[in-house]
Image 1 (cartoon, helix red, strand yellow):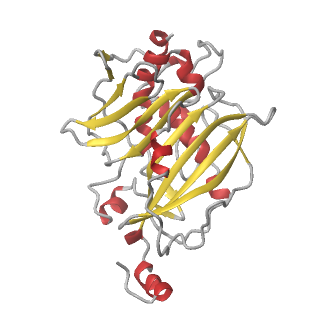
Image 2: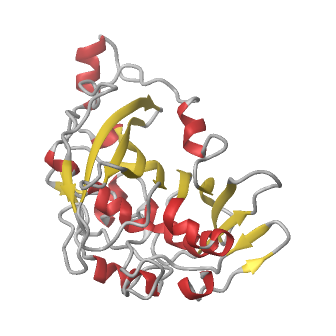
Image 3: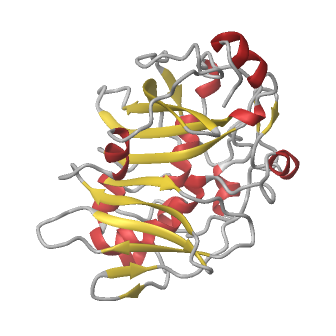
Length: 319
């Protein structure tokens, strides 16, 4: 099956599957949220100290798909999971390589890594199929988080907050809105690793399937219809992300329902982070078909009144 799914050249060693060097495309220059440009816009990113607009993290998931299909075949599309901590940003034109370490005897979970030509690590994490036998990379990170002390941007956000249930679907020519101002067809024209499974019915399920990187788009599509009470405008970026299929694949033109819940809040010197878990359901059966865990890290310096509000809230200067 995997030979039909991808024609990607893969280097295989005794313990690792290695994909080719690729240059992912940046498609979010025109992204807008909270009525302003995002970190994927050159000017906005440069104001925050980045070289230019960054490539969104889940774009990199496509490079792991051929490796997952090589190792697990059909199961990758039905119950695959990528759990990743984003370590460094990537810019359009840079070459990156996906690597997957084969599972050890008796284990089903693999380590994954993406690197640049100079060895810079873009992401690290785990991949598996089926029910994870051990904590995924982000399961583990959730146990190690630094507590969000003295929140400003997220001071009104609480663990346990839930969204209303929302309906979502993805058609080939559907523009996915301000957050993702392109269609699936436009993405497939430049996707890092394409597959006939994504655009034709010539696959085991008889219907085009949504690529894993576009599942992130689908699951975020309606996020602004029921937003969290965070302060803004401010600029954020994905710092951690896990997408897990339970009853996959998810299909083009199929309706789904989803709900989101805040499961953690964390902080660093530069950011305030909210962790949300999205549960995706089949509306006909109410069966859970997929989940996504996202750490949206908001950059403190991007929120103009941060220092002033910190002083008012806590009676001292912001650290």
